[in-house]
Image (cartoon, rainbow, N blue to C red; front, side):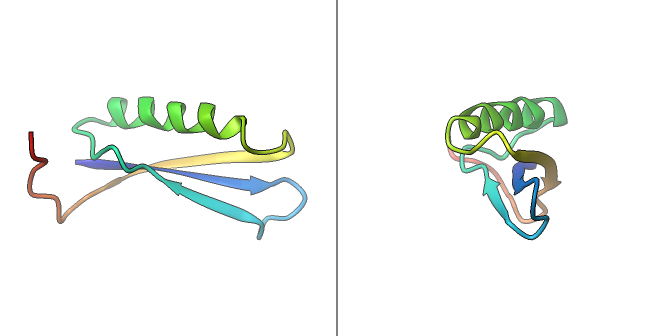
Length: 69
């Protein structure tokens, strides 16, 4: 299972970043995780200035047993 993360950083300061962690997942495939990353970035664009850079990753959750239905 994978969890989506997006890092939003100001272009003028590499140390001025905010990490956004998805709370809907985890996801079974990298494609599904990437789709969620795209949703997070689209939502974040309305909250931040244009002078930011978006970086992302999908990390493997080793401690996830299952998600309740």
